Each structure stands twice: as C-alpha cells, then as structure tokens.
Image 1 (spheres, rainbow, N blue to C red):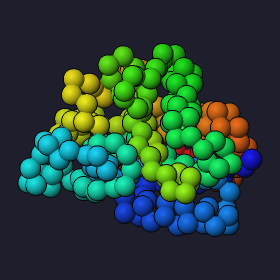
Image 2: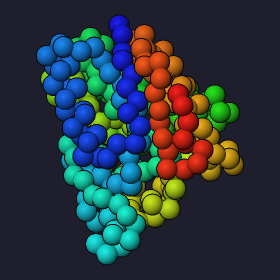
Image 3: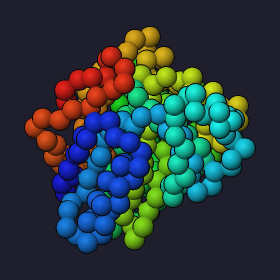
Length: 231
C-alpha cells in the first residue's frame, strides 16, 4: 500500500481543518490513497469532544496576550496546545484497508513514536489509561483522533522545540499531576524538524506496512530558528 506524504509547512488551524476535510472526503470516495499530513500550526489551543472547559486556565485577556486562538474540534481527548516547534500529523487512513480496530490504530500510532524516541536514545512508553507517548511522567507526544466510515483524521502532536510555557495555561489532555516535555528539553539542544520528520515518516511506513511517497522538495518552516529547514 502507498501513503502520500504532504508537508505544507506552517498552516493556520482553520486551514488545517479544511485540508483534512478535503482529503477525508476524497479518501472516502476512493479518489486518493492514504495520506500523512505533517505540518506546524501557529499558537492554538484545541478542545476535543470530551473537553472540560475547567481545564482552560486562562482568561480571555490572557489568551489575547498569548497570541493564541481556541478551536473546538471533533477529535477525541481534552484540551491541548499546538504551536511552532511542534510536529503535528494528520493521518488520513482508510482502516478498512488496514484493520477496523481503533484501539489497534492508536496502539500503532504510539509505536511509531516509541521507535522514533528510541533513535534519540530515549526510552518512551505508553501509559495505562492515557493515550500518547510518555517519558516518565511527562507526555512527549499527544494524540487525539476522529474516525468516520473508518477513515481517520486528526492525529498527533510531537513536541520537538515547542515552547512548553504555553502548556502552563491548561491542564494538558485533562490529566492532573502529569507533565509535558519535548525533545529539546530532554536532549538539551534544539533538533532540526527535518531530522524528526524523516524518522517519523520512516517509522510510520514500517509500523503500518506502507510505502511512503513524498514530494521531492518540501519545506517545514518553524517559528524557531532550528526549524526552518528543507526536508
């Protein structure tokens, strides 16, 4: 099976939703193969279907000072943050061609990032009752998905050079007593987005058994200096 990789760069959240909807519609119609969208968002807080607004700790005035937007979405999960230095992935997969099992899909997504973290010398793991990929008590990769007629949307947010202070204004994923981390924090240096994206693409293909097809020239542009790189 083939999976196309799209790398549109920095994309506003509303535009990201539009891109997903277009591709989900086309995938349901069988007009396109599976797709992995990899991008970055400007600062934005998103709420899943099960979000508790008590987990948003900022006032409207504070939100404006943060320069962030807020969106309600149809993904699973609670509240999270997206912003520069974070690799966001939206897999548009037809699970009828893989396995009609949402738990299997989420487990497979987690496996991708456990393998990626291992390449950086990090021992990542799953946490009982909490989706995502963790380093100890801190979440490295957040996950929240939506499935319609077995076609997936939304996906994952991998903190690479993310400014973690944005998470101080929410209860991330509604999990009290848990932290958030990034590759930069764990390794003590900034990591090029291209390096991480390459490894995510490779392990995604390995875990899901797909041949990953990507544009010859693409660009992910980060709001941080180390992220502005050619893929």
